[in-house]
Length: 67
Figure 1 (cartoon, rainbow, N blue to C red):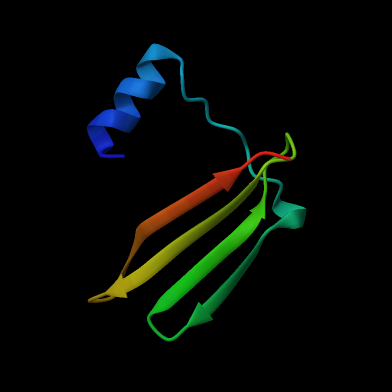
Figure 2: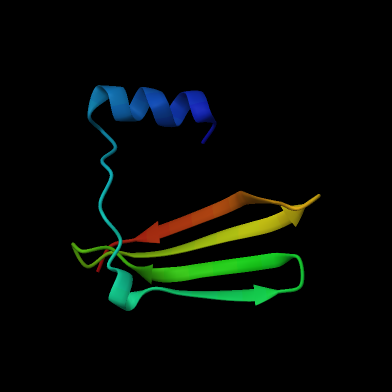
């Protein structure tokens, strides 16, 4: 989704933010790539992939699922 689509979905109430469970989260770094994995407090899971471009970490992919 584009940023505009995410903001539209949030505004319409069709997309909700759920807090990650810090105790069930981890980050692995592979050179200039990092992968964050974990669970939301409601039991869903996520994988978030970052790349390091010029010293700045940028999110490039997010996957979520529900149990």
